[in-house]
Image 1: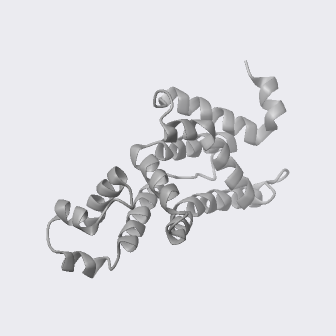
Image 2: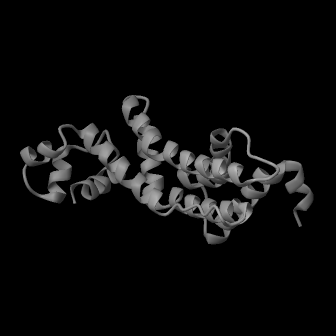
Image 3: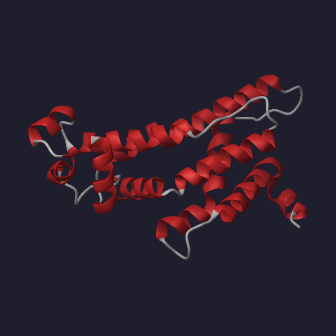
Length: 195
């Protein structure tokens, strides 16, 4: 309850302009009670970051028995939907604004969000390497980070900066399909195969 209310305020006003009194105004209760659970605004914001990251992780599943392109497409689509969701964009904006002044906030985001997603995908790549009889994915962690960067691509920047209309399901599917194609076959392969 407290974390959800805090997320609403942090995402609306930003970390710097949010006070613990703003959170109490939504949740009710006293400052003393709030500080009992969260001794500082930074710790409360870290809890918000963790909460959003945990929801993100719930929606990401990798099935080793499916073929690689299908698995990457499903995973990439789920990931991009989350990144482009109102909470995903608000969290990224908030963390980006505060990380230069509060490096621990940026580190927390990396630890509980970005690095967890990358490690989940890297673990999947390692599993694929164990199952493979031929080609393997070298440097699974780096490959995972590169795939996630391809999926986010320009569509994430456009959504973050509010340029143009919000990306729709078709935009997400196209971006992910192209990211998977580029990741698996390289830029030249994807250019040659482009209809």
